[in-house]
Structures are given as structure tokens and as C-alpha cells.
Image 1 (cartoon, rainbow, N blue to C red):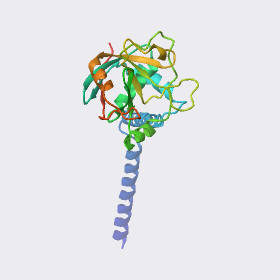
Image 2 (image 1 turned 45 degrees about the horizontal axis):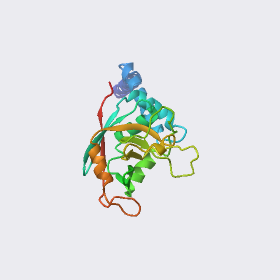
Image 3 (image 1 turned 30 degrees about the vertical axis):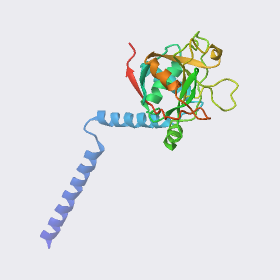
Length: 236
């Protein structure tokens, strides 16, 4: 009986020691660095999630930071009639950052040149597809302030941003759409009302071909002009 008690006491003591050792080992990390990295990563992920959807209050600070971290300034727009390249102007930093941001988010891919006014403009960035509306909701509801005091004019080939269709006395721009001036030599009556933020530097003949397409009563081309937009280069 005494032996049995001795063995039971010994087993109990060993189990208690093992338990204490295990707790001590799991409570003290081998290296503090991984713990700090995990904590930082969680914070970064939380911040990224908190940025979206963008709002009227958060859009400009977000685009300001995005523009500093993403200096690309050239995009390629591909259509069924060919492709053309657009240089985005440094003088309009929010509009450049917005276009690069939406291109990186693949917003424009699958949208259309939905409005064609002969000998005037082609306008893109809209779509009847439900996934375009879903993209807009996920990115956010915001407008961009006009930037028209930099001397940029609506020459032929420039890309500009239309105003929102809502009641909009300050001509705030709809960030999801754009138009390209096809009129020769330009559409200067638009100066001061809409923000020029880039120009076509290759493939203007494709813009002319799209502008020549027949349209319905809504000015939508009878031949759908879907687009794919990609960023071409890093600004030097």
C-alpha cells in the first residue's frame, strides 16, 4: 500500500512539473520579432479595409496618398477597333491618381464607350452590366473637385472628366467616367467647366473611328465598344 501511494505521488508530481513547463514555454515567444510583425500586419490590413468604400470625406486624402505612392502616368485603352495610349498630366494630381487607382482596381475593364457625339467627343466608363454597379459600390461614392485653373484647355485629343449628373452647382466630377475630345481643333467652350487631366499620345485614329460609329437615340454606339485599360509605365 505504501508503494502504491509512493508511485501515485510520484506520477502526480511529474504531471504537475510537465504542466508548468508547458505553460511557461507557450507564454514566452522564442523571438519577439514575429509577434511584432504579426501585430503590424493586422493593423495594416485593418487600415486597408477601413479605406473602402471611399466617401466624400475620405476620397481626397486617400487619393493624395495614393498619388504619392503610385507615380504612373501612362495608360493604354484597348477597344475592338484598336488601342490608344493616354498620358495623364502632373498638373491634375487627384484626377491622375484617381484614374490610375481605378485602372489598378480593374474598374474600367468591361465598361463601354457609351456615348458618342459625332465631331465632338467619345465618353467612356459606364455600362449596363450589374457588375459595374457592384464595382462602384465597393469602391465608394465620391466626387472630385474641379481643377481648371492650370491653363489646360480642351484641345483635340485631351481626356477630361464630366460633371456628375446630380444637382451640382460646383461642377464636381464623376470619378468613374471620362471623355475624349475628338473635335478639331478643340472644344474650347468646355474650358473652365470640366477638368482636362491627360491627352492621347498614340492612336488618335482609333478615337476618330469610334467617333464615326452610328449611334442610337441615346448616343450609344450601335456597335458595343468595350474597353480594357492597363497602366503602361512608371513615371520617371
